[in-house]
Length: 112
Image 1 (cartoon, rainbow, N blue to C red):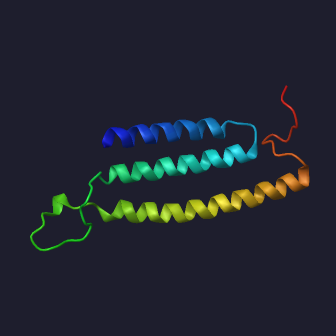
Image 2 (image 1 turned 90 degrees about the horizontal axis):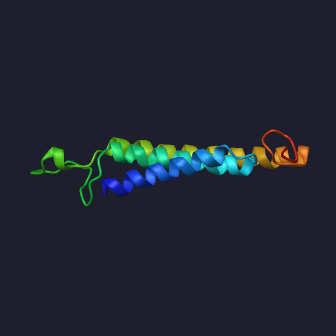
Image 3 (image 1 turned 135 degrees about the vertical axis):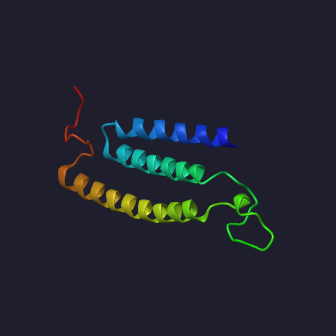
């Protein structure tokens, strides 16, 4: 399970970096979103990958077998903040495209 999680984090990070380096604004926004998802998966991975275990203490359960609730809370907060940031970026993208007439990051219509 850890290998699959590591590969997913690596692929999402690579795709996010590749999209950030693209010339169009929409691709940069999608790249930033992919990077934020990769960071969220990384935080989940740091918290320990455990399945079918409650994050709540119960009588007779050893505390080392429980999953850590702090990374879960951090990722939930990061998802909400990432959604709001992506929505803000899309509004700025639409306003910029309406004012300038193109969606290139550097403001040029064609590549040389």
